[in-house]
Image (cartoon, rainbow, N blue to C red; front, side, top):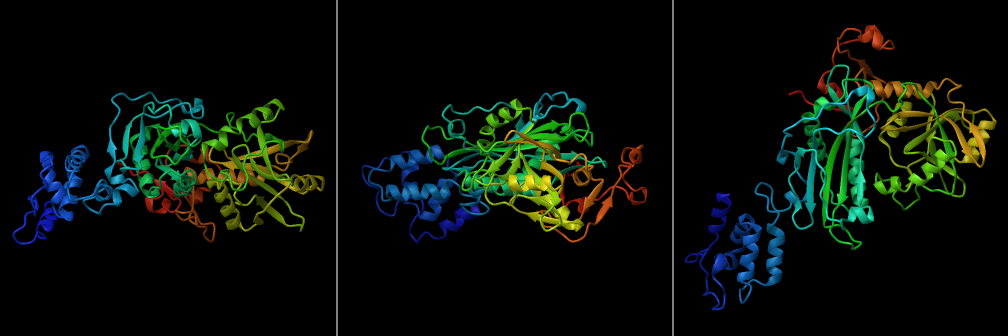
Length: 509
């Protein structure tokens, strides 16, 4: 700090002074609050001093010398913009572009809550002791990230999130592996998608790696909330909202990013691989090209509730969302959809709708496509599928399985579809749900570190070969609890360097 000031002072001409005007101050200039130094010091010294005065003092100083001082109002406004975010280490812009994990403030809760029983968890009903919050304003940029005790939010009644749904969120999980390490499944993809959604919502951008590092520290603090179970996990909900205190429909000048954690149990409450029935009615549309259906935004979910209620009234579990005059199949409920069938060319194929602006780019969806490519046993295809295509394939006995995929369930089989008053039977369960069960087992084994596929990189890049390594917690009864694991492959606990290719480990204290 002092070195910067000395550097500025060296630029003062001989006989001059950085704190005494080179010319007499105007007679009507108020000398209070060091007005003369702030107005007449050379620009570099002035910007330095302004950056380290309190904002309130600096503002008053400008007001005191605004009558007759040499610097114009426009120049002072430009100076304010360049000094309010002055960063001693990296310049004026670094602190406004993103927050930094190194600046994280941690305030621990005085009283810790009782942990729920993993076997009785209800999705999204229990929350951990702490949360992460980061505030942003267009004037000052990002504030320092802060982990604090879990608490209610206090926002203005006119906040833009409440009136115009200026909001986005993400959903991912932390798993406690059989080696007792805590891992996140491909969090880089969630961070990338969150940044993409922020642009669509006109919320400010941030460094996704910095947010991920802050989330890791939050989980580290609440690590005992990660269930000691391979069938339960800790759900992570990053949320980003506009809190502009105005009823004007505009880009928000204030925003709040926060992350909360919730322990969750198995998606299938009875522990079995239960299929769902779907209600397909083109009168409801979840997404359309040019809209927001391919972003993770709350407005996409709130508007789907009426259709979900009608599906329940018609005796179905979920909605099969259709699009366009051709009644293209898009998604099922809040999940991506897969069809395993024999296509018209007689090829065994795993198909899913393409990312054409209507489909949410799911992390599990991408993982399933990459697994199918690695196995190389059938064709993997992103293609449009219409209800007529499905009906014809059912009539010709070409459908093997249909299932949804997502963070909550991983894989969910489909048994039937109610369409135009007719119940279409999907033979997923009759065919033994072999592929969906195989995918389910493979992904869950990766998540709890029974197997780790080395082909995936941090950003989800596919690799060649299905290289797997097995790990054991070396606890009693491991092999009886995991009979599908070949005892000859049990090699011991995986090292951090091995799992970093796909999963983000929470470092041990």
